[in-house]
Length: 254
Image 1 (cartoon, helix red, strand yellow):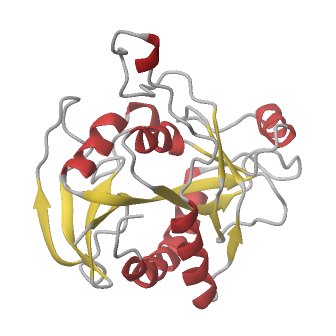
Image 2 (cartoon, helix red, strand yellow; image 1 turned 90 degrees about the vertical axis):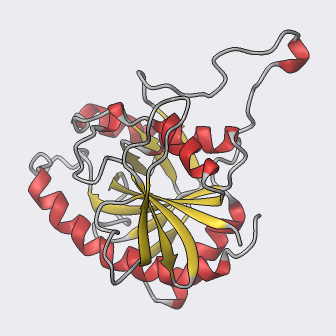
């Protein structure tokens, strides 16, 4: 049976969520992943759970070893990838505590390893240029939306996720600029994760958990971590319910 890789980790190691959990240490040509993988079952599905920022959340966004993370999941036999990510909203109608299944991506990172193809084989016909017009797998998105609606979760269909370098938050000018670009959400992790998944041929989709309105609202004080963490923890309950419902629907490779 195929395995679903789940990238996120923070708060998802709850033994009431993942059954028969066992730790698996993996190494790759790019070094070890952010943490040992947690193998087990959620909703009856075999999963491999990876804590993107480490088990104690000690790895800043720009220091995540994305290549090792993605390769480790592939080497464990994962055929689908589901990622969770906290994010800020650039739209009034998408508020804190709500979930979004984005369908587009803008990569505004600057210092990360963004490809497995550090060198091309000889010959122009062997150039490795990955198609990424639609960065998130349509079938996984469809199943997430169906499951979320069944559970009556506060869920939005579609939206453009923009990834910044972090770990700082956006300035107000940057936040307004992102709105002008057509972005709907801001986060610090989905790029180049989605790019690397595409290079490996792994269908990948994201559950974006909105924690705040980024920095574009002039009438609101600057973002503070404690407030975001409180909203994030509230979102974890919704994410757990969504995973339990959607994972059995992803039984076969797409």
